Image 1 (cartoon, rainbow, N blue to C red):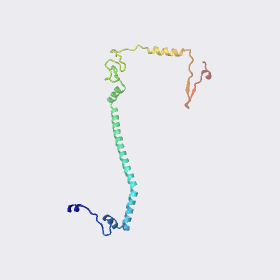
Image 2: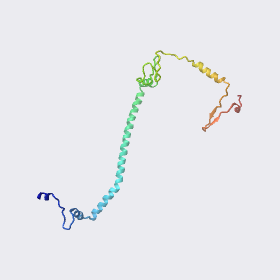
Image 3: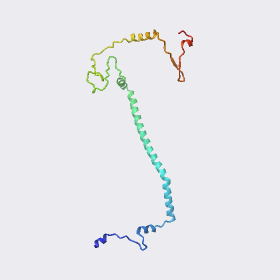
Image 4: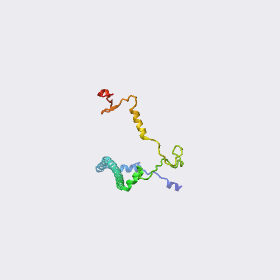
Length: 185
């Protein structure tokens, strides 16, 4: 039993009946100087807190803008490299062959369209029809077709549709007819 009493804590009471914490708080005395310093410290925090927040936000904006500047400098370097490549005649020739499908006289250019893995060899993409192995010349006489079209339009008995000339203001006005201009129909 003596051991149990040794581990048990008993609150200490002062002669006036106060606990040690209450006594400690009551023993603090504030002088006029300490109150003045406490007021100055609170005012300092209240006044500087918004300024510090603004400073931190501005530092973050500066960091973001510096990152943007670095990225822009990298893109400028890439564009300078592109300009240097385009000044090389061999690069221009390669681009004309790849992008515009230019070939030298006497060369043949073949354009393969579609996904090669999805279609079987010898069939047209998407149709399933077979592709010929020999070159074919189309049997269309485009000069005769164009001449026939012009003659059909000129010798037609159907009345011409009324032409509409655009006005400068954007609205459309009918074009003057031969009767309005004094000419023959």
